[in-house]
Amino acid sequence: MTAPDSGWLEGAWRGQHLDCCRAGRPEGLDLVLLGDSLIQGWGGPDRRIEAAGEVHWARFFGARRAGNLGVAGDRIRHLAWRIEHGALDGLAPRELVLLIGTNDLEDGMAPEDLVEALFALARDILERLPRTNVLLHAPLPRGTSLDDPLRRAVAATKPLLAGRIAELGARARFVDLTPSFLKEDGSLATELYDEDALHLNAAGYEAWGQALEPCLAAPHPSFADGVPRSLERAWIQAERTAGLIASGIVALGTAVALAVCTFLEILYEPLSWILALAWIVLAPTLLWITARWPHWEYPRTGYRVLPDRIEAWRGLIMRRAWSIPCARVQFTDVSQGPLQRKHGIATLQIHTAGTASSEVSVPGLPHALALEIRDWLVNRTADDAV
Image (cartoon, rainbow, N blue to C red; front, top):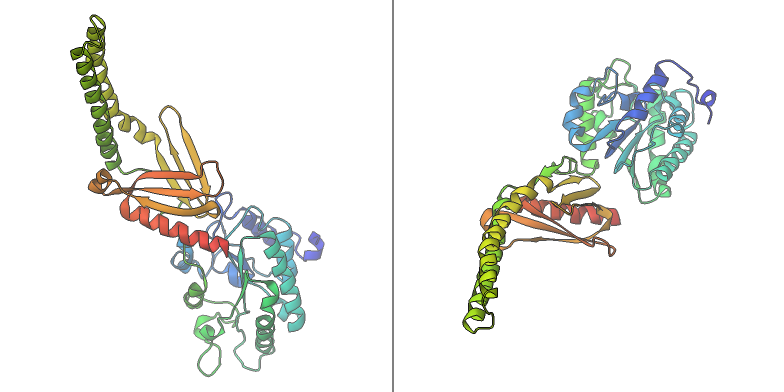
């Protein structure tokens, strides 16, 4: 589709389109809201608009890394043009809510034609975003009268969408929240709408958010925010103690071996004295290095959890870094030795597909957090496998 075909060439619409092309990039989004003025009315980050739903954005979407790609006045052909010209480029959300079509009905498009156009658009989105689930949102009711032609057109569209949603495959769902916007007698809940009985006011967006939230995937946990984190400082003490025990055993064993060899005259002077002097120098040095090593390594060891992967890095001399996509995780363990139990920390062990870096350990996590990340990775991997 070319720009003239879209029906929009310049002005505020193009500026809004460019804002949408920048939204959520390069960080990425977990949830995308895509559509016309009803979607635009949510406001949100990266949008230079006045929006009635802005006051409720953080409550319903703040924990979800959501982005609003709605533009007022859009018809299906406009949205198709925006998608073709970069609106979704660089994004790979878990979910996308698609609400579009009420303006097409107002232009006189028949419900049957609307469904055909909407399904073609949804197929294009599913093809462009192969890991995204699409929630095809039913048009919201409009018009104060039950006999309003557009109210009837909206009502006629919904069963057509519901009856054909299976054509889009397992990654598409139909969402109909009509009851949230009607009174018991079927009349419009006008207290949720502006005077035009089409656009929502702040109360309408609150009602919409309350109805939509159960339809969305649970937000990622707070630890999956991509922020680099250090290990618990108790890890230093645990590593220091473990190292000193091991070094002490080595030093003591070496001393005993030297004493026995000298007593049995296996070693003769001056070699025995040279080795004894070397032990006197090297044993304390080994113990000192062992005691200090965790302090040196600690600032260079850490991890961060993102919605689609976990990253870890470690090493003082030989530095290594891992980036493990959730899709590669086979299974996870949480282990605790005696010293880790004493300090309330644990090691998260991630086993991945393949032979390179097939096991990655993230030590020094609070035990409860290690269990949370393990359970989240298990559920996340199961979601990816669906």
